[in-house]
Amino acid sequence: MGATMVKPLVKNGNLLDALPSQATLHVVMLGLDSAGKTTALYRLKFDQYLNTVPTIGFNCEKVQGTIGKAKGVHFLVWDVGGQEKLRPLWRSYTRCTDGILFVIDSVDTERMEEAKMELMRTAKCPDNQADLNPPAKCLAESFR
Ligand SMILES: Nc1nc2c(ncn2[C@@H]2O[C@H](COP(=O)(O)OP(=O)(O)OP(=O)(O)O)[C@@H](O)[C@H]2O)c(=O)[nH]1
Ligand SMILES: [Mg+2]
Image (cartoon, rainbow, N blue to C red; front, side, top):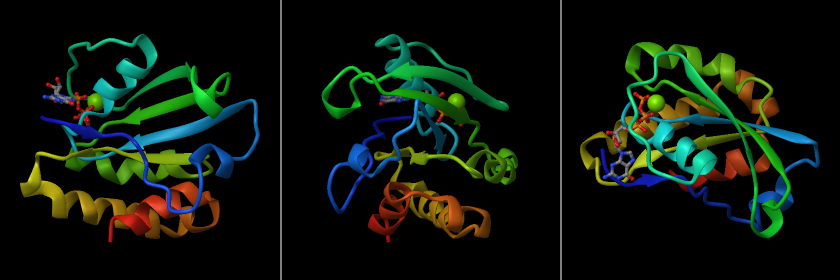
């Protein structure tokens, strides 16, 4: 529990500038269990705080950007369960996605190393090496 980091860090320029121009961009939210993924997703979708239960499987919502360069851009956001037993399934969601949003509970310092390990594992996955767009690569790099 605690604060979540949902704002990606991009080294070179704006995240949206780096995204391919498509009608709908597919984004996968990953992170440890209780990092705050589902909370963030519902906040994006409904603009309010909703109670959540641990995700077994995934949640999927279409959200539309409302401000800045994201205005009018449609995102199909896949929020995948982060429990340890579910993490082997992440790779099937990250294959061919437009972006990966890795959510970190910034107050859960005890599990920061675990989060780092999972993020690096995801970034280094051979399936993702060819498919990851620059924003996802930048996020992984900034975490080292
Ligand atoms: N204080 C605080 N609590 C939060 C925040 N984000 C999420 N939580 C709480 O953390 C708990 C877990 O949040 P979830 O959004 O369900 O976490 P998750 O990452 O989806 O977890 P899994 O589905 O198990 O992977 C819930 O009780 C939330 O209310 C936050 O920014 N601040
Ligand atoms: Mg969840």
